Image (cartoon, rainbow, N blue to C red; front, side, top):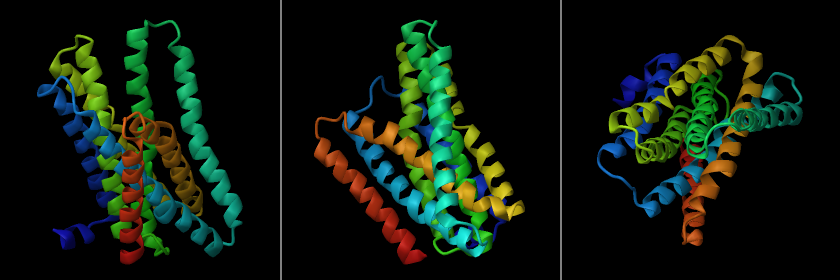
Amino acid sequence: MVTWFCSLNHIVQALLATLFTWSITALGAAIVFFFKKVNKNVMDFALGISAGVMLAAAFFSLLNPSIEMSLELGMNPWLIATIGFILGGILLFVSDKIYSLKSKNTSSIKKRCSMLITSITLHNIPEGMAIGVAFGSLIYNLEGATLASACMLALGIGIQNFPEGTAVSLPLRREGMSRKKAFFIGQLSAIVEPIAGIIGVILVMRVRMLLPLLLAFSAGAMIYVVVEELIPESQTNSNKALMAFCTLIGFVIMMILDVALG
């Protein structure tokens, strides 16, 4: 199975990886068929682990390769990394603000649900692109850019997609929506990931000069998601210290795999 996956074209690898992250979202959304409420400790544990994995991936799999490739291409490494990183965060920040302004006239319940769906969908776009960029960068043999690190990045994003799918479907069910419709909308929030993944991998494979910027952009977007969504949500748990430790564990797991297999 591993050999078969390694032999595939990087575009196909990115597509399969993002289809995996989408399927985990669908799995999370499917919780609506079995439960009205999910144990918060389990959800926060998954969010904490995922936050750590994504933090490590943002540096070891995205930002560091961005700096390395900037040097190879004769670019200013700190400038390219800074511009891409900040732009990644700004995109999500502006998107959230714009949607928040447009939702002022809706009812509080509808606004809360629609903002949640839109926010998660928007965050899935750079996550999908990050996976695509990670797989696309493999053709350049950059330090830190390995098949193992790209797969771990997809795994980390997939882990945090599970509670995201649940976070969409359960509130919709509580507001009176049917289970089937709540599930459909929940899984639909991640369908943008395969699309963004294909765009990301094609861009970096066709336009090499864009790769350092796109790698840093993906890192910035992921850090924004972790800081704004994952860590604050996991810290609403009564056992904050344990959730913080989960984040450290996730970071260490990703760091070891990235460095050891790199």
